[in-house]
Amino acid sequence: MTIEVSSPAALPDAVGATAAGEWFTVDQARIDAFADATEDHQWIHVDPERAAAGPFGATVAHGFLTLSLLPHLASSLVRVEGVSMAVNRGMDRVRFLTPVQAGSRVRAVTEITGAEPTDRGVRVSSTVTIEIEGAEKPALIAEALSLYVPA
Image 1 (tube, helix red, strand yellow):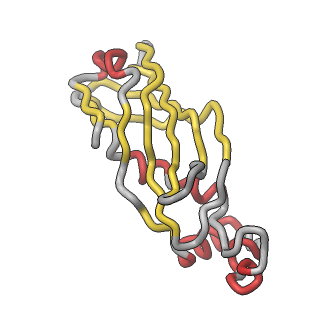
Image 2 (image 1 turned 120 degrees about the vertical axis):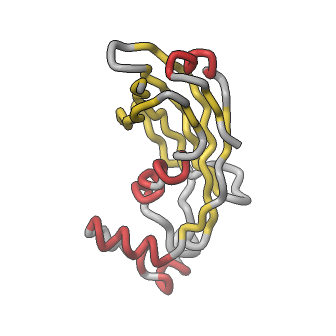
């Protein structure tokens, strides 16, 4: 499902719209690669044997790995025509709620919560939730900011 908007100027009309993405597997190889890239080799992420007896019952993805997947997981959820570029403007708030065990599938669900015209384009705020397949609570909830620049 995709939120489709005819132009940046029409983004305020999309406030309240929601979309959910495709499921994506977070496997141990990705967790290990992230650990190597960030030098965060804590055993809960990279030692399957020790982690099996640990608090989560398996290795878990770094919270920042899950957060770093937002561009991929959410990129297809909002399509705006007549845009020269869409720019990530950051986050107002991020909360990590549930660890993502290795092998779990996650997806993004986004809701456009605000759209404000600026002199450079339309600044959009969205609540992005990363769900874990089969879990009651999401992995994280983030308040994301983007700028859509007209063509």
